[in-house]
Image: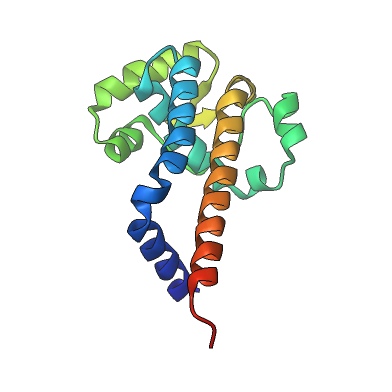
Amino acid sequence: MAAVLNDTKALVAECYPKIARDLLRPLLGLFSHCLIACDNDITKFMIMLVVALRTTMHRDFVARTQGELLSGEVPVFPSLPISVRSVGETLGLPKETIRRKVTELANDGWLVREHGRLYFTAAAYQQLSPVREQIEELAERYYEVVAALKAETEAARPSR
């Protein structure tokens, strides 16, 4: 499996000029949606991304359906531990900057602070739907680009 991944990475790197446009266009779309969702504050989105990643690693989150998460049935999502300090360390930003932006995100109902930990809310999940949809589109597009590149490479190899 590792050899296949390394081969794929090498192929993507080798053919990057050919596929760059197809990779960058959906990435630009994703960032545009991120900025819109977070009032042109990319740091807020990065904070949400760090907290969301810890949330998606929790077994109770993974056991939920998309419908349950979007319904608000679970108002505050379970998460592996994450704090203002650890978000700051992850992003390489000052703790005070993170604390201030977390306060804004909590006031907006996107995060909950409890006992020094941060939790992602159903409100955030709902309001970030356009961003999640862009991530899904990006994943689909990247899959298509890499699959087509691999197929093209296979077709160009001389038959034995």
